[in-house]
Image 1 (tube, rainbow, N blue to C red):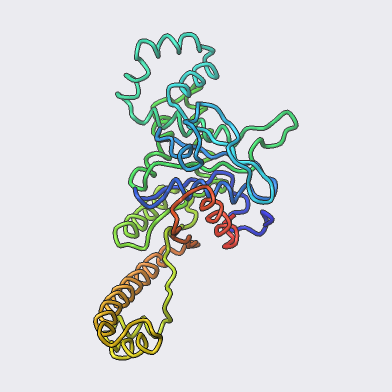
Image 2 (cartoon, one colour):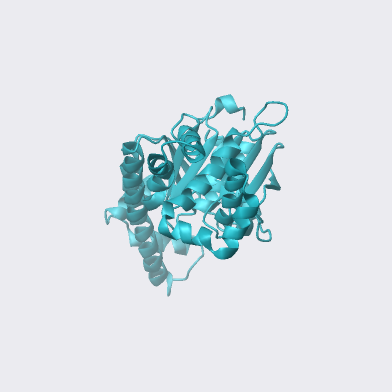
Amino acid sequence: MDSADTDWDGVRLHVVTGKGGTGKTTVAAALALALASGGRKVLLVEVEGRQGIAQIFDLPPLPYEERRIAVAPDGGDVYALAIDPEQAMLEYMEMFYGMRRAGRALTKMGVVDFATTLAPGFRDVLVTGKTTEAVRRRGKDGKRVYDAVVLDAPPTGRITRFLNVTQEVAGLAKVGPIKNHSDLVHGVVKSPETAVHFVTLLEEMPVQETLDGIAEVRGAGLPTGGIFINMVRESLLPQVTLDAAAQGRFDVGDLTLGLKSAGLADSTDATSLAEALAEEIVEHARRTELEQAERESLSEAALPRYELPLLAEGVDLAGLYELAESIRTQGAA
């Protein structure tokens, strides 16, 4: 799909957040594959130190360097970077102060850990700074090194502070390299080149946290993206059957006769089997009804929504490509 046909044309930094357990890292990886398809180059960034990207792509733990980890559909490359705040600190000191040796000495003394403990936001500054540097970076030919950067960001409850922390640091440093660095990061994060996407499930708690997160991100003046509804179950029953079951109008007798006529049960156990199946159908219908109510709640956010299927075999590499294709066909990438 040509980039001009996507919902996020012009967006270069895709920030992916979501409540724990919603599959945030999986969606970020699938989005990176989708964005890279057709010959583009995308960087997938991890910031929480869990080596989630390596696990999903079935790779050894990633070092602190950008390396190619996958080929996207129709060509294109996905690179990955697991950011190490300590290494980012050394880069930072060398870039702005020419003090890499001093930085290593401070690391040995534990000063970096001491500094980030006293000012937890400083760690986030290093991480967002490294990510936005990759967004801005150009090669010798003057072109951007990456067509897009996908950031597997902290959970929804922490995302606004994480993205806004550079503004707080800029308030402490009125002049100098730190101020300039913070302004650059802040400029990227709040620009139309950035979109904050939310991953959720069709369940009450994740949906409510998503809606709260969207409101908080908007209130901070940060650019919202789309909502990725993950692990969606496909209904195998027609809507008329679901409606009848949800309203208690499901006829067990008809089901019993159907089982007998199909030769799936004899007269002895047809009724008990029909009753067990009826319970499953009613439960499925009620769950489907609740999921539809959550869809309606999400529609209040007035953001594009993308539904990704529940993978019966779990998330392996083949499943990841399946999710990427689903994202592409829905126009998100």
